Image 1: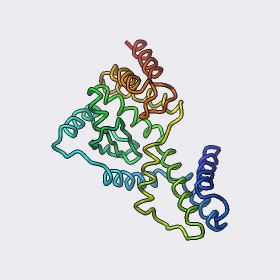
Image 2: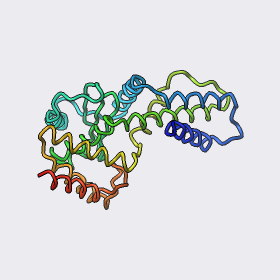
Image 3: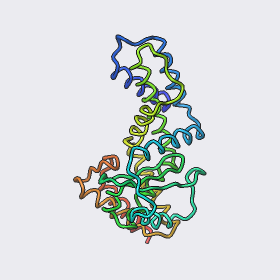
Length: 253
């Protein structure tokens, strides 16, 4: 319950900050509050539906690698190591984006996206470590909370900026793009990041894949920007996370 209240308060503060208080319609605030409450109670089915729409919007706004490109072929090879696993019962649907950005993410509908900038930087074992981490956020429920917050903030922003206009029941294309951006840029807590690291380590162990890649992936991210990569939350730092994974590796030899 406490997390749901925190979620709604965060969204409400965002709406007031962006729009100011003077022009807000009380009915609009009630509507915004209703949408925030709805966001805090989004079911798994709702998350899948929102994630389907958000992932399609992201694909529409991005340059997706063709099926015959070297990135798509390599990603297919990398993903084969995970076998026929699902994410919360959803089939994994992966694609590569052609961009120099270093990033990867996964959504609650099984949507996994990997940027070519990351693929250029990592070897196959490192990519599997990173992907295991991102899928861990889904499996552990972190992405559900991130989507709830993204949805609540987007709904609050729309209600506040309307200043008297009624809210639409469905997200427009621009609102969906805003929601998708918020989700992709979401920052996870220290405990969530550590839990996702452990999930990846355990998954790589289960699938009999090279776990050292998880260590060296963090080391490369540390070299990229002094240990504070924008790809993962800066707390804990990439060097600390690499050291923790190395300690687990040493303990499990």
